[in-house]
Length: 205
Image: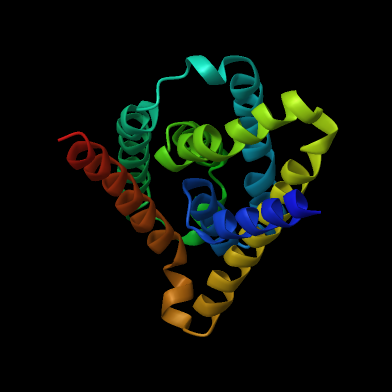
């Protein structure tokens, strides 16, 4: 029960923190595509988490401790590049024209997924939290730690969807903000990428 509650709690906290995928999903909400937004919030992150679970399970003891610092450069560069491209490509388009651009949606999901892999917080979580719990599972049996990961997934995805809904609802209260929600989401994505780069640069000095 303790591990279940810990997992839920950490998942909720993680789901409330703005992430690249969350901001890309918010852009889809701005286009009136809630189902696609929910799929973007869940499927890519499930793939990333499954991959990192496997990596942590087999290679936890061999992953360098400062990997979060170096991957921040990768994640930040991807986010800045995509956000800049998206803002440039859509500077004169209406929401209806943007909605008819499936290639941009696929590119955004790919960029967001790669950025999640390169996000420093992702590696910090798997190296400092999930890794030791997996190590505990080796000693006490892996069924012992399953509640932590199940609770984490439930808490994270529930909080992520709720966060995007709250941001969209807040924007709906201000008509002008709602009209520019896609632009706001991409500007936030750009700012998030810059913050990754700054954190990596100053963290390594």
